[in-house]
Length: 349
Ligand SMILES: [Zn+2]
Ligand SMILES: [Zn+2]
Image (cartoon, rainbow, N blue to C red):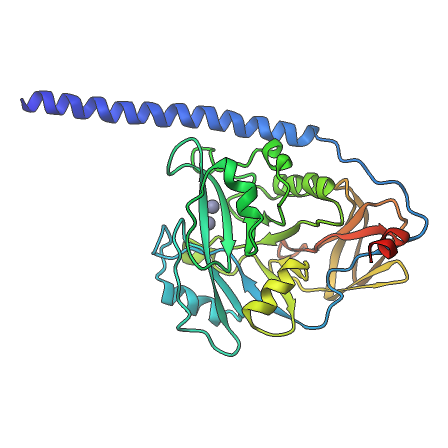
């Protein structure tokens, strides 16, 4: 009898291991294929505009505040209890902290002050091929859980009025099942946010996803990029975050600023952006390497400066900026400054 039970047990364990191995082999191969396809997708430049203007997402009143929008606590697979996680971020000068446990709403606003608020969120698993595997997306400013969690539900979820983010698109975590398929994302119509910097996901590949999607959505439905800690343990804290230009430290002001792209991604480098006479100026507190990157993801100008500028030609599609502190190997990523036809804008108004 005991022999039979042991035999059945061993068989079941062997079966589970075989399934895990097959899922891993299939999804890792799939992840590699996605990477190859990312490189093949061509980004077309728009026609050169003669009479154009530049859309500046930072051209609003307000001050920059520090925000972390992706963290986990012991309520899911994080190592830190909620109270301590909040303290860690408060101590590092954050004004906004979103707690985004896996498939769980962790609410804790007991520590909110005049200068600090927590945002209710959830990192949802979009199940594929079976629970607990699948793609991840973050939902912020939510009231509760939702029942839909399949790939066919993603566009509808993204279309809801809270802030919804495509997480770590290039990751191969979760046996490779967490990687987002670029063709799948291109079929969607409601992407507004995507993580480009998350320590689980290759930054260069994430940027390729972003550019391909920006190319599809264009200046009328811009997609904004995020940098996040995706905190699970203490060492993850304060590595990548966003600086958001808001009028005050409230949920409403943060949501508004995120929706219009008034924020930049950073690992500790700060900058001010201005547009004047079709010229983009970037001011930093120290001399850093400043790269200007066009819609095709090509660097069109690079210089070391603390007061740099770029003169738009009209055929770049958009320009985004990366500021690099080469000594500490830390970066800043701006949102895109889109070129739009001046006449179209007038008609549009
Ligand atoms: Zn995730
Ligand atoms: Zn996460």
